[in-house]
Length: 139
Image 1 (tube, rainbow, N blue to C red):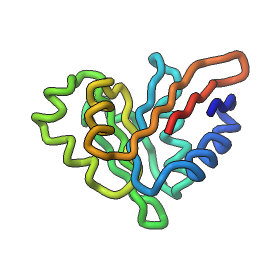
Image 2 (tube, helix red, strand yellow):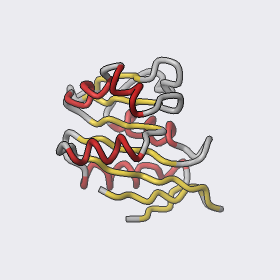
Image 3 (tube, rainbow, N blue to C red):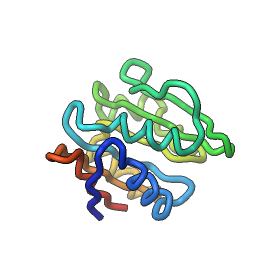
Image 4 (cartoon, one colour):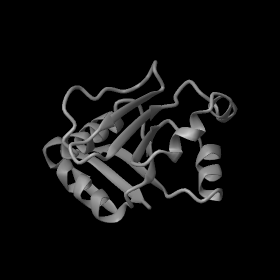
């Protein structure tokens, strides 16, 4: 599915994700620097009623937020981490937690591993365009 949306239209992307993703899912966010990976995560957080600032977890690797309905949103930035380091740090175990796990800069190796062990994994490619961004969603 491809959705073209401006910043003011991100609710269209969030609505589609709510319709198609299960309650527990891992979502890989792909795009160049400043493509809008964290911005999409912020829109999802807002929809879940998460108050406060939602920022990229560049240095902490993971942020966890609780929504107004008791659901959780996890946000990862794996830019500096390869698959082996990720596994050695025990971060893989975090995917057992209930909620949506938004993963920026996740490797193809990690994605393939997660799919092979039975996780619900989706991919969102984000590309800038004249009127905003094109979100290509594979679930």
